[in-house]
Structure formats: C-alpha cells, structure tokens
Image 1 (cartoon, chains in turn orange, brown):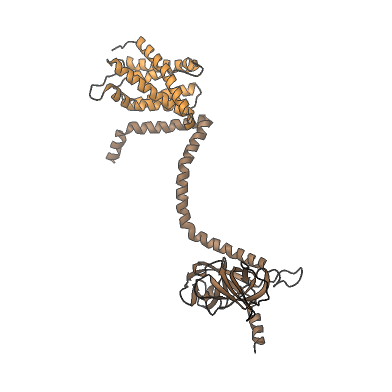
Image 2 (cartoon, each protein chain N blue to C red):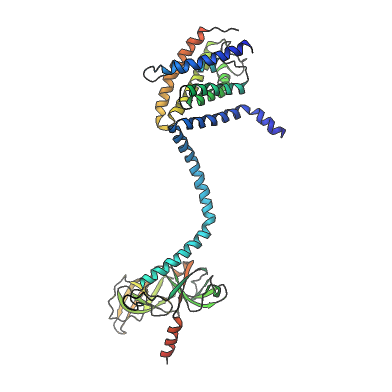
Length: 167
Length: 273
C-alpha cells in the first residue's frame, strides 16, 4: 500500500469524523453547517480512475449520513458531485490546456477558485434540493445554498492553504 | 455480445452513478418519511399519467363488452320502470301484486331508415332469442315499432315512421285517448288523432302509451303536444306532437313480450263480427 493511498484513507476518516462531530454541530447564524468533507472530493487526484472516484464519493456521503443520522442528502450530493467533477474540471481548467494532475498541483489561482466555486455550489445545491425536496422552498434552497457555500468555500480555502502540495 | 460488453465498459461511470443514485434514493426514503412521501408523490405524478393512458386504452377495448352489460342492466331497469308506471290498469285488486304480463329483452338496431313513407327496421334478435311477430319494440326514451316478421337471428320491425301504423296513446294528465300517426316528414313530428274535443288539454302535455293494445304497456312517455287546435265541426282535436327521441337515431332497443297476448287476441276476435 503506497503512502498516497494511506494518506487518502487517513484524510477520508479524519474528514468524515470532523464533519460529523465538529462541523455538523456548528450552526453558524442559527442554521449554517459548513461542509468541509467536500475538501476530500476536491483534493482527490484528477488523474485517478473515475469509476473508483464515484464509488468513493458515494461511500463518503454514506458514512456521513450514516453517522450523523440524517436521511440521504449527503450521499446524493457527494455522489453527484463526484460524478460531475470531470465536467467541472474541464470547464474550469480549460479544454485545450493540459489538465493538472491534482488540485494541489494546479498553478493558476483563478482557475482553482472557479473550480472550487462551481464544485461547492453544485454539491450544496444538490444537497439542499434533496433536503427541502419541494418547489415551494425554491428561494429557501437558493438562500441556504449561497450562505452555506460561502462558509464552506472559506473553510476549504483556508484549510487547503495550510497544507502545501507534497509533489 | 462483445458490443454490449464494450458499451457497458464505456458507460460504466454513468451506469455506476445511476445505480448508486437509485440506491441512495432508496436509502433516503427508508430513513426519512418526509422524503418517502415526496418520492411517492413524484412517482405517483408520473405513473398516474401512464396509468390513465393505459386505462383509457383498456377501456376502449372493453367498450363493446361494457355496452352489452349496460344494455342488459338497462333491460332489467326498464322492466322495473314500466312495472312502476302501470299503477291502476293492471292492478287486480287491493293488496294483490300488480299484474304485469310483460317480459323485456334487449336488442340492437342493425338497420334503420327514415327516407320512405313506410320504413322498416331490422334488429339482431330472432326466434332463437324468443322474439315473435307482433311484439312491441321500445327504446330508452320512447317506442320504436312492432315486430313484423322473424327469422332465426333477426327480426324486422315496422318502424314508428310508417304511415299505416297507429299507436294507442293517452295523456299523462288526462284520460282521453287517441292514436299517434307519423306525418311523413320530420322523424319526430307526429299527429295525434281521434281525441275528443271535450278533453282538457294544454300545449306541452306529455303523451304516453295508452296500454290498450297488447303491444305496449301503459305509461311509456313518448313526446309532448306542440300544436293544439279544437276543430268544433268534427268534434276532435287537431294535434301535433313532438317525440322525445328520434326513432331513426336509435341503436339500443328492447323487445316487449306480452304473455297474455293470445288471450287478448282471442277476445278481440270474438268481439269482431
């Protein structure tokens, strides 16, 4: 087992635990719980097997839902986000240019921000659509998505800047 | 086979995604009753349209059978209604059950005409179904005619639209009686003859069958008076009636059998010189 695999497994466990026991209890402004575990889906290497990645996204959501006793919104959101990640990568980093091998190794800051923004917005939008699951709550969905995505983005940018790329 | 496997390998990501999505939806609905209801509603929304479509197709193919059942049911109801209609004429005496000697069968009109002055109708019931000559034929809203001749499976009927056919009629609110005869033009325009001018009648009075012939029971509503003229010279009314139902547009009919017809005919023969 390579060290990259070990690190991936470790970060998976740590992110799941911290999400369930820390970030799901935050209730910023009364109801905002930033979702840090998206960080795992962001930092997972871009050049890995996509099929495996979809399954990992599913497992990530499953563990979070399972441990925090919520319905299945995290599963659907993280599964869909991991399925749509290649499209967002292609659109954020450009089709003609050589795609970076991972989020860490990408050089252009603007592209990284665009990628993060779209990825987090997509994930949160799907999450809140599943949570509210009603056309009547449309404005509520948009509001929660925007606010939570802002805090998640902030948190993810801060935490990923703490860890420098090993490569 | 190789191509199928190739396609499966090529689309493994979407396949995996949708498979896991389905699984997570199941997970979601099993853990949250709110989502279970919502997903159920969603499924109902889509399936109800589909069910409606398939149901309408099924119904379309069932129509013939349904029609037959309804016609049969109507036959029974018609018998009850006619029996109810016959309050005094067939009452034997107080406390006895009403004498209602009529039996009703259903039939379909398979040929009809209105262009001649003497029209005939063919129905799809014959001797095999118990239809005999000189039975009355009625419809849901009036009468159609009298059976003229019968074959095994079919019978021809003298239509009400036949200038030689006279039907004994009465009025709902008057005991005067006369005969209904077709004028020969409009299929719903009839004249009522032989009503004595002493009877109290008004425009719009309902005409019903008189029950004096052995063909039709008393009290089948036929139409209303549309023109009324008291001809003092002859002592009879000149009257025009409008039928409730156009006899040329009828498809479902009921054949009426009078069980005491022979007795009545025998007596009629005795009386006639």
